[in-house]
Image 1 (cartoon, helix red, strand yellow):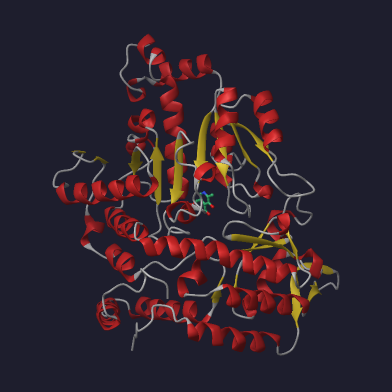
Image 2 (cartoon, rainbow, N blue to C red):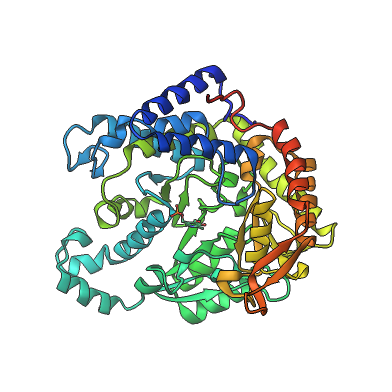
Length: 486
Ligand code: PLP
Protein backbone atom coordinates (compact mmCIF):
# COMPACT_ATOMS: atom_id res chain seq x y z
CA UNK A 1 0.00 0.00 0.00
CA UNK A 2 1.43 3.39 -0.93
CA UNK A 3 2.72 5.75 1.76
CA UNK A 4 1.53 7.56 3.83
CA UNK A 5 -1.43 5.25 4.40
CA UNK A 6 0.95 2.69 5.82
CA UNK A 7 2.45 5.16 8.30
CA UNK A 8 5.41 4.58 10.58
CA UNK A 9 3.10 3.25 13.31
CA UNK A 10 3.22 -0.55 13.39
CA UNK A 11 0.26 -2.46 12.05
CA UNK A 12 -0.20 -4.21 15.39
CA UNK A 13 -0.86 -0.82 17.04
CA UNK A 14 -3.47 -0.03 14.37
CA UNK A 15 -4.98 -3.53 14.72
CA UNK A 16 -5.37 -3.23 18.45
CA UNK A 17 -6.80 0.31 18.14
CA UNK A 18 -9.58 -0.95 15.87
CA UNK A 19 -10.06 -4.23 17.69
CA UNK A 20 -10.65 -2.41 20.95
CA UNK A 21 -12.86 0.23 19.35
CA UNK A 22 -15.03 -2.50 17.83
CA UNK A 23 -15.32 -4.24 21.19
CA UNK A 24 -16.58 -0.99 22.73
CA UNK A 25 -19.09 -0.52 19.89
CA UNK A 26 -20.22 -4.17 20.11
CA UNK A 27 -20.97 -3.75 23.80
CA UNK A 28 -23.79 -1.35 22.80
CA UNK A 29 -24.92 -2.43 19.32
CA UNK A 30 -23.13 -5.55 18.07
CA UNK A 31 -24.79 -5.34 14.67
CA UNK A 32 -22.99 -2.08 13.95
CA UNK A 33 -19.66 -3.64 14.95
CA UNK A 34 -20.46 -6.58 12.65
CA UNK A 35 -21.39 -4.30 9.74
CA UNK A 36 -18.16 -2.34 10.25
CA UNK A 37 -16.10 -5.56 10.13
CA UNK A 38 -18.02 -6.72 7.08
CA UNK A 39 -17.48 -3.41 5.27
CA UNK A 40 -13.72 -3.80 5.64
CA UNK A 41 -13.92 -7.40 4.38
CA UNK A 42 -16.04 -6.32 1.37
CA UNK A 43 -13.77 -3.39 0.49
CA UNK A 44 -10.73 -5.66 0.78
CA UNK A 45 -12.26 -8.21 -1.59
CA UNK A 46 -13.40 -5.91 -4.40
CA UNK A 47 -11.81 -3.90 -7.17
CA UNK A 48 -12.90 -0.40 -6.15
CA UNK A 49 -12.95 1.74 -9.26
CA UNK A 50 -15.40 4.43 -8.18
CA UNK A 51 -13.66 7.63 -9.27
CA UNK A 52 -14.83 9.63 -6.26
CA UNK A 53 -13.73 7.14 -3.60
CA UNK A 54 -10.44 6.35 -1.92
CA UNK A 55 -9.01 4.76 1.24
CA UNK A 56 -8.06 7.24 3.95
CA UNK A 57 -5.17 6.38 6.25
CA UNK A 58 -5.76 4.88 9.72
CA UNK A 59 -4.51 8.19 11.17
CA UNK A 60 -7.22 10.09 9.28
CA UNK A 61 -9.92 7.55 10.17
CA UNK A 62 -8.99 7.39 13.85
CA UNK A 63 -8.93 11.18 14.14
CA UNK A 64 -12.64 11.23 13.30
CA UNK A 65 -13.59 9.01 16.23
CA UNK A 66 -13.00 11.43 19.11
CA UNK A 67 -14.74 13.79 21.50
CA UNK A 68 -14.24 16.70 19.10
CA UNK A 69 -17.48 15.32 17.71
CA UNK A 70 -19.21 16.49 20.89
CA UNK A 71 -18.27 20.15 20.60
CA UNK A 72 -20.32 22.97 19.11
CA UNK A 73 -18.19 25.73 17.59
CA UNK A 74 -20.30 27.97 15.34
CA UNK A 75 -18.38 31.03 14.24
CA UNK A 76 -14.77 31.35 13.16
CA UNK A 77 -11.40 30.88 14.81
CA UNK A 78 -11.22 33.16 17.87
CA UNK A 79 -14.78 34.38 17.28
CA UNK A 80 -17.20 31.63 18.33
CA UNK A 81 -20.79 31.69 19.47
CA UNK A 82 -19.96 29.00 22.08
CA UNK A 83 -17.58 28.98 25.01
CA UNK A 84 -14.69 26.57 25.38
CA UNK A 85 -13.62 26.37 21.74
CA UNK A 86 -9.89 26.85 22.28
CA UNK A 87 -9.01 23.33 21.05
CA UNK A 88 -11.36 23.56 18.08
CA UNK A 89 -9.59 26.83 17.23
CA UNK A 90 -6.30 24.91 17.19
CA UNK A 91 -7.79 22.24 14.94
CA UNK A 92 -9.43 24.64 12.49
CA UNK A 93 -6.32 26.87 12.32
CA UNK A 94 -4.13 23.86 11.54
CA UNK A 95 -6.47 22.52 8.86
CA UNK A 96 -6.57 25.96 7.21
CA UNK A 97 -2.80 26.42 7.51
CA UNK A 98 -2.07 23.05 5.88
CA UNK A 99 -4.58 23.83 3.12
CA UNK A 100 -3.04 27.25 2.41
CA UNK A 101 0.47 25.82 2.33
CA UNK A 102 -0.43 22.76 0.28
CA UNK A 103 -2.34 24.65 -2.40
CA UNK A 104 -0.54 27.99 -2.21
CA UNK A 105 -3.83 29.73 -1.46
CA UNK A 106 -4.05 33.09 0.30
CA UNK A 107 -7.06 31.94 2.34
CA UNK A 108 -8.64 28.59 3.33
CA UNK A 109 -11.93 27.73 5.07
CA UNK A 110 -12.08 24.22 6.52
CA UNK A 111 -15.65 24.14 7.84
CA UNK A 112 -17.83 22.85 4.98
CA UNK A 113 -19.28 19.44 5.81
CA UNK A 114 -19.21 18.24 2.22
CA UNK A 115 -18.48 19.27 -1.36
CA UNK A 116 -21.99 20.56 -1.90
CA UNK A 117 -21.74 22.70 1.23
CA UNK A 118 -18.39 24.06 0.06
CA UNK A 119 -19.94 25.05 -3.28
CA UNK A 120 -22.87 26.74 -1.57
CA UNK A 121 -20.47 28.72 0.62
CA UNK A 122 -18.60 29.74 -2.54
CA UNK A 123 -21.78 30.84 -4.33
CA UNK A 124 -23.00 32.76 -1.34
CA UNK A 125 -19.67 34.52 -0.92
CA UNK A 126 -19.65 35.52 -4.61
CA UNK A 127 -23.10 37.09 -4.20
CA UNK A 128 -22.13 38.71 -0.89
CA UNK A 129 -18.86 40.03 -2.32
CA UNK A 130 -20.73 41.59 -5.19
CA UNK A 131 -22.79 43.79 -2.91
CA UNK A 132 -19.83 44.93 -0.82
CA UNK A 133 -18.38 48.40 -1.37
CA UNK A 134 -20.62 51.02 -2.99
CA UNK A 135 -23.75 48.86 -2.86
CA UNK A 136 -23.57 48.40 0.89
CA UNK A 137 -22.54 52.02 1.46
CA UNK A 138 -25.71 53.10 -0.28
CA UNK A 139 -27.66 51.33 2.46
CA UNK A 140 -25.26 52.41 5.24
CA UNK A 141 -24.39 48.78 6.08
CA UNK A 142 -21.06 47.15 6.89
CA UNK A 143 -21.89 43.69 5.58
CA UNK A 144 -24.72 41.86 3.83
CA UNK A 145 -25.94 40.26 7.03
CA UNK A 146 -27.05 43.70 8.23
CA UNK A 147 -29.40 44.17 5.27
CA UNK A 148 -33.09 43.76 6.05
CA UNK A 149 -35.04 41.33 3.91
CA UNK A 150 -36.65 44.25 2.11
CA UNK A 151 -33.31 45.93 1.39
CA UNK A 152 -31.86 42.65 0.18
CA UNK A 153 -34.84 42.15 -2.12
CA UNK A 154 -34.51 45.67 -3.58
CA UNK A 155 -30.78 45.22 -3.99
CA UNK A 156 -31.28 41.92 -5.77
CA UNK A 157 -33.43 43.70 -8.35
CA UNK A 158 -30.96 46.55 -8.69
CA UNK A 159 -28.07 44.14 -9.16
CA UNK A 160 -29.90 42.12 -11.76
CA UNK A 161 -27.23 39.68 -12.79
CA UNK A 162 -27.44 36.43 -10.90
CA UNK A 163 -26.41 34.32 -13.85
CA UNK A 164 -24.24 31.22 -13.68
CA UNK A 165 -22.57 29.35 -16.53
CA UNK A 166 -21.28 25.84 -15.83
CA UNK A 167 -20.54 22.56 -17.58
CA UNK A 168 -23.61 20.47 -18.38
CA UNK A 169 -24.25 17.31 -16.41
CA UNK A 170 -24.00 14.98 -19.39
CA UNK A 171 -20.66 16.53 -20.41
CA UNK A 172 -19.24 15.77 -16.96
CA UNK A 173 -20.34 18.74 -14.81
CA UNK A 174 -21.85 18.37 -11.34
CA UNK A 175 -25.38 18.92 -10.03
CA UNK A 176 -24.18 22.01 -8.19
CA UNK A 177 -22.94 23.63 -11.40
CA UNK A 178 -26.39 24.98 -12.25
CA UNK A 179 -28.35 21.76 -12.80
CA UNK A 180 -32.03 22.76 -12.69
CA UNK A 181 -33.24 20.37 -9.95
CA UNK A 182 -30.33 21.49 -7.70
CA UNK A 183 -30.49 24.67 -5.63
CA UNK A 184 -27.69 26.13 -7.78
CA UNK A 185 -30.07 25.99 -10.75
CA UNK A 186 -32.70 27.83 -8.74
CA UNK A 187 -30.63 30.51 -6.96
CA UNK A 188 -29.05 31.46 -10.31
CA UNK A 189 -30.37 31.92 -13.81
CA UNK A 190 -28.25 29.25 -15.37
CA UNK A 191 -26.93 28.17 -18.71
CA UNK A 192 -24.58 25.35 -19.52
CA UNK A 193 -21.67 24.78 -21.82
CA UNK A 194 -21.07 21.32 -23.23
CA UNK A 195 -18.21 19.54 -24.91
CA UNK A 196 -17.46 19.11 -28.60
CA UNK A 197 -19.94 16.58 -30.07
CA UNK A 198 -17.20 14.86 -32.08
CA UNK A 199 -14.12 14.90 -29.83
CA UNK A 200 -15.88 15.12 -26.45
CA UNK A 201 -13.35 17.81 -25.48
CA UNK A 202 -14.00 21.18 -23.92
CA UNK A 203 -13.90 23.88 -26.59
CA UNK A 204 -12.74 27.15 -25.02
CA UNK A 205 -13.97 29.19 -28.01
CA UNK A 206 -17.47 27.84 -27.46
CA UNK A 207 -17.27 28.61 -23.73
CA UNK A 208 -16.06 32.14 -24.58
CA UNK A 209 -18.88 32.71 -27.08
CA UNK A 210 -21.49 31.48 -24.58
CA UNK A 211 -20.03 33.63 -21.83
CA UNK A 212 -20.04 36.71 -24.07
CA UNK A 213 -23.65 36.16 -24.96
CA UNK A 214 -24.90 35.21 -21.48
CA UNK A 215 -22.61 37.48 -19.39
CA UNK A 216 -22.66 35.36 -16.22
CA UNK A 217 -21.81 36.59 -12.77
CA UNK A 218 -20.24 33.18 -12.07
CA UNK A 219 -18.27 31.07 -14.52
CA UNK A 220 -17.89 27.56 -13.12
CA UNK A 221 -15.06 25.25 -14.13
CA UNK A 222 -14.61 21.73 -12.82
CA UNK A 223 -16.23 18.34 -13.28
CA UNK A 224 -17.30 14.98 -11.92
CA UNK A 225 -16.93 12.91 -15.06
CA UNK A 226 -14.76 14.71 -17.63
CA UNK A 227 -11.65 12.64 -18.30
CA UNK A 228 -9.39 15.53 -19.27
CA UNK A 229 -7.48 18.42 -17.74
CA UNK A 230 -8.72 22.01 -17.91
CA UNK A 231 -6.67 25.07 -18.79
CA UNK A 232 -7.65 27.40 -15.96
CA UNK A 233 -5.62 30.31 -17.32
CA UNK A 234 -7.93 30.27 -20.35
CA UNK A 235 -11.03 30.00 -18.16
CA UNK A 236 -9.85 33.01 -16.14
CA UNK A 237 -9.23 34.96 -19.35
CA UNK A 238 -12.83 34.24 -20.40
CA UNK A 239 -14.16 35.22 -16.96
CA UNK A 240 -12.22 38.50 -17.09
CA UNK A 241 -13.46 39.28 -20.61
CA UNK A 242 -17.07 39.17 -19.42
CA UNK A 243 -16.54 40.46 -15.88
CA UNK A 244 -17.43 37.11 -14.26
CA UNK A 245 -16.09 35.56 -11.08
CA UNK A 246 -14.24 32.32 -11.82
CA UNK A 247 -15.28 29.56 -9.46
CA UNK A 248 -13.45 26.24 -9.75
CA UNK A 249 -14.83 23.06 -8.23
CA UNK A 250 -11.81 20.76 -7.95
CA UNK A 251 -13.64 18.19 -5.80
CA UNK A 252 -12.52 15.37 -8.05
CA UNK A 253 -8.98 16.29 -8.92
CA UNK A 254 -7.74 18.11 -5.77
CA UNK A 255 -5.31 15.24 -5.15
CA UNK A 256 -3.71 15.83 -8.54
CA UNK A 257 -3.34 19.54 -7.73
CA UNK A 258 -1.97 18.77 -4.25
CA UNK A 259 0.41 16.20 -5.72
CA UNK A 260 1.72 18.68 -8.34
CA UNK A 261 0.52 16.67 -11.32
CA UNK A 262 -1.62 19.64 -12.36
CA UNK A 263 0.71 22.63 -12.39
CA UNK A 264 0.95 25.90 -14.35
CA UNK A 265 -2.22 26.60 -16.29
CA UNK A 266 -3.74 23.33 -15.00
CA UNK A 267 -3.52 24.40 -11.35
CA UNK A 268 -6.79 26.24 -10.66
CA UNK A 269 -5.86 27.90 -7.39
CA UNK A 270 -3.91 30.91 -8.72
CA UNK A 271 -6.47 31.59 -11.46
CA UNK A 272 -9.80 31.11 -9.68
CA UNK A 273 -11.28 33.79 -7.46
CA UNK A 274 -12.64 30.93 -5.36
CA UNK A 275 -11.84 27.22 -5.45
CA UNK A 276 -13.82 24.58 -3.59
CA UNK A 277 -13.13 20.91 -3.11
CA UNK A 278 -14.10 17.78 -1.29
CA UNK A 279 -11.43 16.28 0.92
CA UNK A 280 -12.31 12.60 0.48
CA UNK A 281 -11.79 11.83 -3.21
CA UNK A 282 -8.34 11.96 -4.80
CA UNK A 283 -7.16 14.07 -1.84
CA UNK A 284 -7.60 10.95 0.34
CA UNK A 285 -8.91 12.63 3.48
CA UNK A 286 -12.10 12.41 5.54
CA UNK A 287 -15.50 13.09 3.97
CA UNK A 288 -15.77 16.86 3.89
CA UNK A 289 -15.31 20.11 2.01
CA UNK A 290 -12.85 22.97 1.81
CA UNK A 291 -12.94 26.44 0.25
CA UNK A 292 -9.84 28.31 -0.94
CA UNK A 293 -10.06 31.94 -1.94
CA UNK A 294 -8.19 35.01 -3.00
CA UNK A 295 -7.86 37.52 -0.17
CA UNK A 296 -10.68 39.77 -1.47
CA UNK A 297 -13.22 36.94 -0.94
CA UNK A 298 -11.93 35.85 2.48
CA UNK A 299 -14.35 37.82 4.62
CA UNK A 300 -17.41 36.67 2.70
CA UNK A 301 -16.28 33.00 2.69
CA UNK A 302 -15.71 33.29 6.44
CA UNK A 303 -19.42 33.92 6.83
CA UNK A 304 -20.22 30.45 5.48
CA UNK A 305 -21.44 29.82 9.02
CA UNK A 306 -24.14 30.94 9.71
CA UNK A 307 -25.27 31.66 6.13
CA UNK A 308 -25.01 28.10 4.79
CA UNK A 309 -23.50 25.99 7.57
CA UNK A 310 -24.35 25.18 11.15
CA UNK A 311 -21.81 24.03 13.71
CA UNK A 312 -18.61 22.76 12.11
CA UNK A 313 -17.77 19.06 12.43
CA UNK A 314 -14.68 19.60 14.56
CA UNK A 315 -13.66 15.94 14.54
CA UNK A 316 -13.72 16.01 10.72
CA UNK A 317 -11.79 19.28 10.59
CA UNK A 318 -9.15 17.55 12.75
CA UNK A 319 -9.03 14.67 10.27
CA UNK A 320 -8.75 17.17 7.38
CA UNK A 321 -5.69 18.65 9.11
CA UNK A 322 -4.13 15.16 9.35
CA UNK A 323 -4.93 14.31 5.72
CA UNK A 324 -3.61 17.65 4.46
CA UNK A 325 -0.43 17.10 6.48
CA UNK A 326 -0.08 13.73 4.72
CA UNK A 327 -0.64 15.36 1.34
CA UNK A 328 2.24 17.74 2.03
CA UNK A 329 4.65 14.79 2.21
CA UNK A 330 6.76 14.08 -0.90
CA UNK A 331 5.23 10.57 -1.04
CA UNK A 332 1.90 12.13 -1.94
CA UNK A 333 3.37 13.56 -5.15
CA UNK A 334 4.53 10.08 -6.15
CA UNK A 335 1.04 8.79 -5.37
CA UNK A 336 -0.65 11.51 -7.43
CA UNK A 337 1.57 10.89 -10.46
CA UNK A 338 0.82 7.18 -10.20
CA UNK A 339 -2.93 7.93 -10.23
CA UNK A 340 -2.52 9.66 -13.61
CA UNK A 341 -0.13 7.03 -15.02
CA UNK A 342 -2.50 4.27 -13.97
CA UNK A 343 -5.49 6.01 -15.58
CA UNK A 344 -3.57 6.19 -18.86
CA UNK A 345 -2.76 2.51 -18.64
CA UNK A 346 -6.40 1.65 -17.90
CA UNK A 347 -7.54 3.76 -20.88
CA UNK A 348 -4.99 2.18 -23.21
CA UNK A 349 -5.99 -1.25 -21.90
CA UNK A 350 -9.57 -0.58 -22.98
CA UNK A 351 -8.76 1.00 -26.34
CA UNK A 352 -6.30 -1.75 -27.32
CA UNK A 353 -9.15 -4.22 -26.75
CA UNK A 354 -11.53 -2.25 -28.96
CA UNK A 355 -13.60 -0.51 -26.28
CA UNK A 356 -14.83 3.03 -26.85
CA UNK A 357 -13.89 5.82 -24.43
CA UNK A 358 -15.32 9.33 -24.21
CA UNK A 359 -12.57 11.67 -25.55
CA UNK A 360 -10.62 8.57 -26.65
CA UNK A 361 -8.51 8.54 -23.51
CA UNK A 362 -7.72 10.38 -20.30
CA UNK A 363 -5.17 12.69 -18.80
CA UNK A 364 -6.53 12.82 -15.27
CA UNK A 365 -7.81 10.08 -12.92
CA UNK A 366 -11.07 9.31 -14.76
CA UNK A 367 -11.87 6.93 -17.61
CA UNK A 368 -15.37 7.14 -19.09
CA UNK A 369 -16.24 3.94 -20.90
CA UNK A 370 -19.07 4.05 -23.45
CA UNK A 371 -20.72 0.64 -23.02
CA UNK A 372 -23.11 0.96 -25.95
CA UNK A 373 -20.35 -0.64 -28.02
CA UNK A 374 -21.04 -3.81 -25.95
CA UNK A 375 -24.78 -3.44 -26.62
CA UNK A 376 -25.43 -2.56 -22.96
CA UNK A 377 -26.74 0.33 -20.89
CA UNK A 378 -24.65 1.75 -18.07
CA UNK A 379 -27.08 0.20 -15.59
CA UNK A 380 -26.63 -3.30 -17.06
CA UNK A 381 -22.83 -2.94 -17.22
CA UNK A 382 -22.62 -1.61 -13.64
CA UNK A 383 -24.68 -4.54 -12.31
CA UNK A 384 -22.80 -7.23 -14.26
CA UNK A 385 -19.47 -5.81 -13.12
CA UNK A 386 -20.64 -5.75 -9.51
CA UNK A 387 -21.54 -9.45 -9.76
CA UNK A 388 -17.91 -10.01 -10.74
CA UNK A 389 -16.59 -7.99 -7.77
CA UNK A 390 -15.77 -4.87 -9.80
CA UNK A 391 -17.30 -1.78 -8.16
CA UNK A 392 -17.97 1.09 -10.60
CA UNK A 393 -20.76 3.56 -11.22
CA UNK A 394 -22.87 4.14 -14.28
CA UNK A 395 -22.63 7.62 -15.75
CA UNK A 396 -24.08 9.62 -18.62
CA UNK A 397 -22.02 10.18 -21.72
CA UNK A 398 -22.43 13.41 -23.74
CA UNK A 399 -25.92 13.59 -25.34
CA UNK A 400 -26.70 10.27 -23.69
CA UNK A 401 -29.42 8.36 -25.57
CA UNK A 402 -30.27 6.36 -22.42
CA UNK A 403 -30.80 9.37 -20.14
CA UNK A 404 -29.41 10.03 -16.65
CA UNK A 405 -30.90 6.95 -14.95
CA UNK A 406 -29.91 4.04 -17.22
CA UNK A 407 -27.07 5.91 -18.96
CA UNK A 408 -24.64 4.65 -21.60
CA UNK A 409 -21.41 4.91 -19.65
CA UNK A 410 -19.37 3.51 -16.83
CA UNK A 411 -17.14 5.93 -14.94
CA UNK A 412 -13.92 4.48 -13.58
CA UNK A 413 -11.26 6.10 -11.43
CA UNK A 414 -7.80 5.08 -10.29
CA UNK A 415 -7.26 6.87 -6.90
CA UNK A 416 -8.44 4.01 -4.64
CA UNK A 417 -6.60 1.08 -6.21
CA UNK A 418 -3.52 3.27 -6.61
CA UNK A 419 -3.62 3.77 -2.84
CA UNK A 420 -3.57 -0.03 -2.51
CA UNK A 421 -0.41 -0.06 -4.63
CA UNK A 422 -1.75 -1.13 -8.03
CA UNK A 423 0.57 -0.16 -10.90
CA UNK A 424 0.23 0.23 -14.66
CA UNK A 425 0.37 -3.51 -15.48
CA UNK A 426 -2.35 -4.28 -13.00
CA UNK A 427 -4.58 -1.56 -14.45
CA UNK A 428 -4.09 -3.07 -17.89
CA UNK A 429 -5.24 -6.38 -16.41
CA UNK A 430 -8.23 -4.62 -14.82
CA UNK A 431 -9.21 -3.33 -18.29
CA UNK A 432 -8.91 -6.88 -19.64
CA UNK A 433 -11.17 -8.26 -16.89
CA UNK A 434 -13.79 -5.55 -17.39
CA UNK A 435 -13.86 -6.12 -21.16
CA UNK A 436 -14.22 -9.86 -20.49
CA UNK A 437 -17.26 -9.26 -18.25
CA UNK A 438 -18.92 -6.86 -20.69
CA UNK A 439 -18.30 -9.09 -23.71
CA UNK A 440 -20.01 -11.89 -21.83
CA UNK A 441 -23.03 -9.90 -20.71
CA UNK A 442 -26.24 -9.86 -22.76
CA UNK A 443 -29.10 -7.37 -22.32
CA UNK A 444 -32.09 -9.01 -20.66
CA UNK A 445 -35.83 -8.64 -21.16
CA UNK A 446 -38.71 -7.49 -19.00
CA UNK A 447 -41.27 -9.92 -17.58
CA UNK A 448 -43.41 -9.09 -20.62
CA UNK A 449 -40.56 -10.19 -22.90
CA UNK A 450 -39.66 -6.71 -24.21
CA UNK A 451 -36.07 -5.37 -24.18
CA UNK A 452 -35.02 -4.11 -20.73
CA UNK A 453 -32.55 -1.35 -19.95
CA UNK A 454 -31.86 -2.81 -16.51
CA UNK A 455 -31.83 -6.59 -16.61
CA UNK A 456 -28.94 -8.57 -18.05
CA UNK A 457 -27.59 -12.08 -18.36
CA UNK A 458 -24.01 -12.69 -17.32
CA UNK A 459 -22.33 -15.72 -18.89
CA UNK A 460 -21.83 -18.86 -16.77
CA UNK A 461 -18.64 -18.87 -14.71
CA UNK A 462 -17.59 -15.34 -15.76
CA UNK A 463 -18.08 -13.77 -12.34
CA UNK A 464 -16.07 -16.47 -10.54
CA UNK A 465 -13.27 -16.36 -13.08
CA UNK A 466 -12.96 -12.57 -12.75
CA UNK A 467 -13.18 -12.71 -8.96
CA UNK A 468 -10.33 -15.26 -8.86
CA UNK A 469 -8.17 -13.13 -11.16
CA UNK A 470 -8.91 -10.01 -9.10
CA UNK A 471 -8.16 -11.82 -5.85
CA UNK A 472 -4.63 -12.56 -7.07
CA UNK A 473 -3.99 -8.82 -7.54
CA UNK A 474 -5.84 -7.77 -4.41
CA UNK A 475 -3.91 -10.25 -2.27
CA UNK A 476 -0.66 -8.78 -3.54
CA UNK A 477 -1.83 -5.32 -2.47
CA UNK A 478 -3.74 -5.75 0.79
CA UNK A 479 -5.91 -2.94 2.06
CA UNK A 480 -4.57 -1.72 5.41
CA UNK A 481 -1.85 -4.37 5.49
CA UNK A 482 -1.38 -6.00 8.87
CA UNK A 483 -4.73 -4.72 10.15
CA UNK A 484 -6.33 -7.82 11.62
CA UNK A 485 -9.72 -8.00 13.27
CA UNK A 486 -10.85 -11.12 15.08
N1 PLP B 1 -18.48 18.73 -6.70
C1 PLP B 1 -18.11 17.73 -7.51
C2 PLP B 1 -17.38 18.06 -8.79
C3 PLP B 1 -18.41 16.40 -7.19
O1 PLP B 1 -18.07 15.41 -8.02
C4 PLP B 1 -19.11 16.15 -5.98
C5 PLP B 1 -19.48 14.76 -5.56
O2 PLP B 1 -19.50 13.82 -6.20
C6 PLP B 1 -19.47 17.22 -5.18
C7 PLP B 1 -19.14 18.50 -5.56
C8 PLP B 1 -20.27 17.01 -3.92
O3 PLP B 1 -19.55 16.44 -2.90
P1 PLP B 1 -20.29 15.84 -1.62
O4 PLP B 1 -20.84 14.54 -2.00
O5 PLP B 1 -19.19 15.76 -0.58
O6 PLP B 1 -21.33 16.84 -1.20
